[in-house]
Length: 171
Image 1 (tube, rainbow, N blue to C red):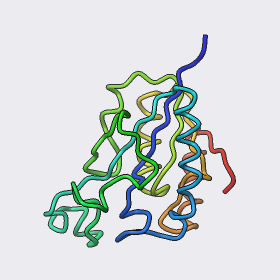
Image 2: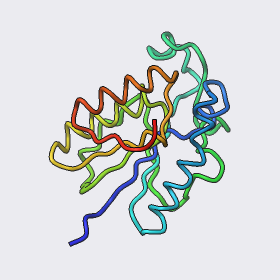
Image 3: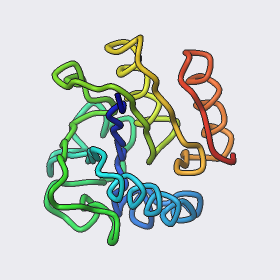
Protein backbone atom coordinates (compact mmCIF):
# COMPACT_ATOMS: atom_id res chain seq x y z
CA UNK A 1 0.00 0.00 0.00
CA UNK A 2 1.36 3.43 -0.98
CA UNK A 3 1.45 5.97 1.80
CA UNK A 4 -0.30 9.25 0.95
CA UNK A 5 2.12 12.18 1.13
CA UNK A 6 1.24 15.78 1.89
CA UNK A 7 3.40 18.84 1.31
CA UNK A 8 2.63 21.85 3.50
CA UNK A 9 4.03 25.06 2.02
CA UNK A 10 4.31 27.53 4.88
CA UNK A 11 3.87 31.26 4.17
CA UNK A 12 5.72 31.55 0.84
CA UNK A 13 4.27 35.03 0.53
CA UNK A 14 5.66 38.10 -1.18
CA UNK A 15 6.11 40.08 2.06
CA UNK A 16 8.39 37.34 3.46
CA UNK A 17 10.39 36.95 0.25
CA UNK A 18 11.09 40.42 -1.10
CA UNK A 19 8.52 42.59 0.66
CA UNK A 20 8.41 44.27 4.06
CA UNK A 21 10.03 41.29 5.87
CA UNK A 22 11.94 39.78 2.94
CA UNK A 23 15.50 38.47 3.11
CA UNK A 24 18.09 37.31 0.62
CA UNK A 25 17.87 33.85 2.22
CA UNK A 26 14.12 33.72 1.52
CA UNK A 27 14.69 34.81 -2.07
CA UNK A 28 17.34 32.09 -2.46
CA UNK A 29 14.95 29.20 -1.64
CA UNK A 30 12.13 30.11 -4.06
CA UNK A 31 13.54 27.87 -6.83
CA UNK A 32 13.93 24.93 -4.43
CA UNK A 33 10.36 25.34 -3.19
CA UNK A 34 9.06 25.58 -6.77
CA UNK A 35 10.83 22.32 -7.62
CA UNK A 36 9.45 20.60 -4.51
CA UNK A 37 5.90 21.72 -5.35
CA UNK A 38 6.32 20.41 -8.92
CA UNK A 39 7.52 17.03 -7.60
CA UNK A 40 4.44 16.65 -5.40
CA UNK A 41 2.11 17.90 -8.13
CA UNK A 42 3.60 15.46 -10.69
CA UNK A 43 3.16 12.57 -8.26
CA UNK A 44 -0.46 13.53 -7.58
CA UNK A 45 0.25 14.12 -3.89
CA UNK A 46 -1.62 16.58 -1.71
CA UNK A 47 -0.30 20.15 -1.37
CA UNK A 48 -1.54 22.64 1.22
CA UNK A 49 -0.51 26.30 1.35
CA UNK A 50 -0.66 28.42 4.48
CA UNK A 51 -0.83 32.19 4.37
CA UNK A 52 0.07 34.45 7.27
CA UNK A 53 -3.03 36.63 7.32
CA UNK A 54 -3.53 39.93 9.10
CA UNK A 55 -6.01 42.79 8.94
CA UNK A 56 -5.43 46.51 8.55
CA UNK A 57 -5.39 46.73 12.37
CA UNK A 58 -2.24 44.56 12.56
CA UNK A 59 -0.14 47.18 14.39
CA UNK A 60 -2.73 47.27 17.20
CA UNK A 61 -2.59 43.50 17.74
CA UNK A 62 -0.39 41.74 20.29
CA UNK A 63 1.91 40.47 17.52
CA UNK A 64 1.95 43.88 15.82
CA UNK A 65 3.10 45.56 19.03
CA UNK A 66 6.06 43.16 19.22
CA UNK A 67 6.80 43.20 15.47
CA UNK A 68 5.69 46.65 14.30
CA UNK A 69 6.06 45.98 10.57
CA UNK A 70 2.85 45.73 8.56
CA UNK A 71 2.93 42.53 6.54
CA UNK A 72 0.66 39.96 4.92
CA UNK A 73 -2.42 42.18 5.09
CA UNK A 74 -5.29 40.21 3.55
CA UNK A 75 -5.87 40.82 -0.16
CA UNK A 76 -2.66 42.84 -0.68
CA UNK A 77 0.20 41.90 -3.00
CA UNK A 78 2.39 41.11 0.03
CA UNK A 79 -0.17 38.58 1.31
CA UNK A 80 -0.23 36.62 -1.94
CA UNK A 81 1.77 33.44 -2.51
CA UNK A 82 4.85 34.24 -4.64
CA UNK A 83 4.45 34.08 -8.42
CA UNK A 84 5.02 30.65 -9.87
CA UNK A 85 4.41 28.77 -6.62
CA UNK A 86 0.66 28.88 -6.05
CA UNK A 87 -1.68 26.19 -7.31
CA UNK A 88 -5.29 27.35 -7.33
CA UNK A 89 -6.84 23.90 -6.89
CA UNK A 90 -4.88 23.25 -3.67
CA UNK A 91 -6.17 24.00 -0.20
CA UNK A 92 -5.18 27.37 1.26
CA UNK A 93 -5.23 28.03 4.98
CA UNK A 94 -5.30 31.63 6.19
CA UNK A 95 -3.74 31.53 9.62
CA UNK A 96 -3.90 34.58 11.91
CA UNK A 97 -0.87 33.55 13.93
CA UNK A 98 2.37 31.57 13.71
CA UNK A 99 0.92 28.07 13.98
CA UNK A 100 -2.35 26.67 12.65
CA UNK A 101 -4.14 24.99 15.56
CA UNK A 102 -6.67 23.01 13.55
CA UNK A 103 -4.37 20.46 11.92
CA UNK A 104 -6.17 17.78 13.93
CA UNK A 105 -9.09 18.16 11.49
CA UNK A 106 -6.92 16.53 8.79
CA UNK A 107 -6.04 12.90 8.14
CA UNK A 108 -2.35 12.81 7.28
CA UNK A 109 -0.17 9.77 6.61
CA UNK A 110 3.20 11.37 5.78
CA UNK A 111 4.08 15.06 5.92
CA UNK A 112 6.76 17.33 4.54
CA UNK A 113 7.03 21.04 5.39
CA UNK A 114 8.81 23.79 3.49
CA UNK A 115 8.66 27.57 3.63
CA UNK A 116 9.11 30.65 5.74
CA UNK A 117 10.22 31.47 8.33
CA UNK A 118 11.99 28.39 9.68
CA UNK A 119 12.36 29.95 13.12
CA UNK A 120 8.79 31.20 13.49
CA UNK A 121 6.00 29.65 11.41
CA UNK A 122 7.72 26.49 10.13
CA UNK A 123 8.86 25.39 13.60
CA UNK A 124 5.49 26.35 15.15
CA UNK A 125 3.52 24.28 12.64
CA UNK A 126 5.96 21.37 12.73
CA UNK A 127 5.68 21.10 16.52
CA UNK A 128 1.88 21.42 16.49
CA UNK A 129 1.70 18.71 13.82
CA UNK A 130 4.04 16.46 15.83
CA UNK A 131 1.82 16.90 18.88
CA UNK A 132 -1.33 15.99 16.92
CA UNK A 133 0.29 13.19 14.91
CA UNK A 134 3.11 11.68 17.02
CA UNK A 135 3.26 8.46 15.02
CA UNK A 136 3.54 9.78 11.47
CA UNK A 137 6.71 10.78 9.69
CA UNK A 138 7.16 14.55 9.56
CA UNK A 139 10.01 15.96 7.49
CA UNK A 140 11.28 19.50 7.01
CA UNK A 141 13.45 20.16 3.96
CA UNK A 142 16.08 22.65 5.17
CA UNK A 143 16.97 23.56 1.57
CA UNK A 144 13.40 24.79 1.11
CA UNK A 145 13.28 26.90 4.26
CA UNK A 146 14.82 30.17 5.42
CA UNK A 147 14.77 31.87 8.78
CA UNK A 148 14.85 35.47 9.89
CA UNK A 149 18.63 34.99 10.11
CA UNK A 150 20.85 32.04 9.15
CA UNK A 151 21.60 31.50 12.85
CA UNK A 152 17.97 31.32 13.93
CA UNK A 153 17.22 29.08 10.92
CA UNK A 154 19.83 26.60 12.22
CA UNK A 155 18.51 26.87 15.79
CA UNK A 156 14.98 26.06 14.62
CA UNK A 157 16.22 23.06 12.63
CA UNK A 158 18.05 21.79 15.73
CA UNK A 159 14.90 22.23 17.83
CA UNK A 160 12.76 20.30 15.36
CA UNK A 161 15.36 17.52 15.11
CA UNK A 162 15.36 17.20 18.91
CA UNK A 163 11.57 16.76 18.72
CA UNK A 164 11.93 13.83 16.31
CA UNK A 165 11.11 15.74 13.14
CA UNK A 166 13.29 14.53 10.27
CA UNK A 167 15.47 17.29 8.76
CA UNK A 168 16.63 16.79 5.17
CA UNK A 169 18.25 18.96 2.51
CA UNK A 170 21.47 20.91 2.41
CA UNK A 171 21.69 23.52 5.14
